[in-house]
Structures are given as structure tokens and as C-alpha cells.
Length: 374
Ligand SMILES: Cc1ncc(COP(=O)(O)O)c(C=O)c1O
Image (cartoon, rainbow, N blue to C red; front, side, top):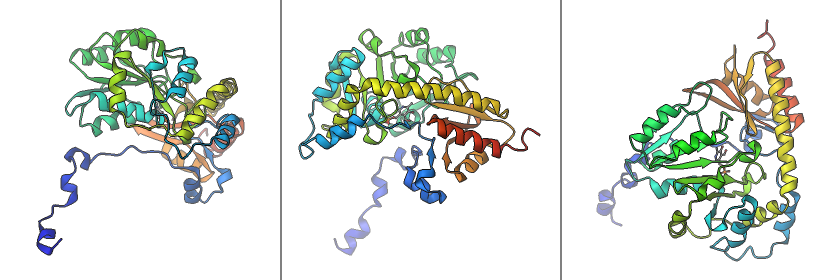
């Protein structure tokens, strides 16, 4: 390229789609080693309670399967046959309806790609998982917020009138992140009567013991997205899936990039489902620990835990700035997530860890709160 040609070249960012130039990115959590270095705390002193990960990790059968596997140099099955069939058996759904991806995030994104053209309406019910708004912005959709009520239930009259005005897509998490409450079957039934696609995000469903998967055979506008990150402890391996209504399935296979689920994730999913009872035991321990942690938090007197059916507890912090409490916990190696947005004032979300993690949280909060009671 000569100097004249160089001078005529546009700045490369001028070629980027304009709506992407000021996209506020999704804020992810940082890994343990990065946080340990940043905080000057040894890695084994980090209690990672900011990402709703599973403290018990995967089934031991996952590591065995990964070390036994001999075809890492071969592409995965593009049709995901074995894993789809295993999930079909796990959920008692037709395996044809199942599509897997790199975490449920990829399936949430696939739903947005499938339905959202620029200017289409996406309904969002905050406070909720930030990914939905992010995906709306990514696709240059018109995002209409229908805030939840004070008790974090969805606002049905407001949602129904927004749906009546016309919307392409509505994401709802059940249990909802970060609030922990579930959606009622009666409300979902009413939402599905509109010409809008409803994506139910069941990332935490195993902790709540409630699923809407079965309804995907009766409603062609319902997609249920699920993951192995939380109940099965595979967050790092990235394995999620969605159960789609049958009419959408051929379209999905033609638009999805091939080989999006790596063989390691595939083997891990198969081994996890073979050891589902072991994993369900860990889910039971987490649910028991959630209730113990909620009671201990409540006893502090200045922390108000909201009821949760997931593997985390949202707490309203009273009489202290929640951001300072988050920072004080961090200094002690305890990572939590801070929220202060519309509908979520001065809150911390604490993932449920092992009993010893809860004990550290309570001990640290007792120290931090000294004087608050006085
Ligand atoms: C409600 C919700 N959906 C989806 C995800 C993404 O999970 P995955 O690891 O399967 O991409 C999360 C992760 O925290 C979540 O909270």
C-alpha cells in the first residue's frame, strides 16, 4: 500500500455497525487466580461466591471420562447425537427438540439471532440476568423494560399490555437471577397466549425442582434453555442446551455454526448424566446450605436475605453501603456480587458454597457489622 492509498483508507472502526460502537459489554466474573493476585490473597483462601458456581465441582466420572477419551483430534459429532439422546432421557423429552451449545449463553444468543431483527421489540423484566438486555442491544432491538414488582414477581398486567402492543421476544429466568424467585405456571400459560416467543431460562431449575420443559411440546412459542454449569458443576467446560418447539428445529440446525459443542464438553455431559444421582446429592446439600445461610444472614439483623429457590441468595444490606461490605468481604478473600440498580437498591448476591464458606461469610459479616447494631 502506498502513502496515498494509506491516506484514503477509512479508520477501520467506521466500518463497524454503528450500534456496536458504544455497546455496554456484559460484565462477567473474573477467575480465582486473577482475583487472588488482584487482592493479594492466596488462591486457596478465596471463597468464590460471586458466580453461582457449584462448590462441589463435577462428578468424579467426568475426569475419568476425559482421561479415557481418545478422539480429541477428531471433530465432534455435528449432529450431537449421543448427548441429545442422553438429555432426552434425562428430561423425558424428544431428543430431536434438544440443541446443545457452549454454555446456555450460546443458546440464549441463538434465540436472539433467530428472532431479533434491528428495531424488533425485546421485552425485559428487570431486575434480571443482564445477558437478555445485552443480546437485545447486540441485535439493535428496541428494548422495552417491564420492571418486576417490589417482591420481584413479574408484573403481569404490565407485561400483558406490553405483549398486546406487540413484541418479538421475552426472556424470563426461573428461578430468576439475581432475585431467586420462580415463575408461576399460570402466569407462563397466559404469557404464551400472545404472538411472542417466550424463552424460559432454567439455569437454576435443578435447585428449584421446577421445569417447564414439558410445555415445549404443546406451545410452539416456548423455548426452554438449561445448563450443566450450575447443578452439574461444569461451568468451566461450557455445556448448555435448549429444548425447542419442533417447528424451529430444522431452522436452528441450518443457522447454527457446526461443532459448537467441543468433545470435552460432550464427554463431560455424558459422564454427568450417568452420575446424575451423585450430582443430585450435591444439589440437595446446596439447597440445605442455602436455607442455613439464609437463617444465619437474617440473624445478623442488618442483612435482609430474600427467599431463594436457586443456589444463591440476594440480600438487601441495611445501614451500610453494600459496596463497602462487598469490598470488606473481598479483603478477606470472599467474593460476592454487588448490585445497585433500579429495583435492586444496596444489594449483594451471595452464592451458596460449602458450610465452611457460609461460616466464613457470617464471621466476616459479623466483624464488618460491629457497631451497626449499636
Ligand atoms: C439466569 C442465567 N442464565 C444463564 C446463565 C449462563 O450460564 P452458562 O454457564 O450455561 O452459559 C447464567 C449464569 O450465571 C444465569 O445466571
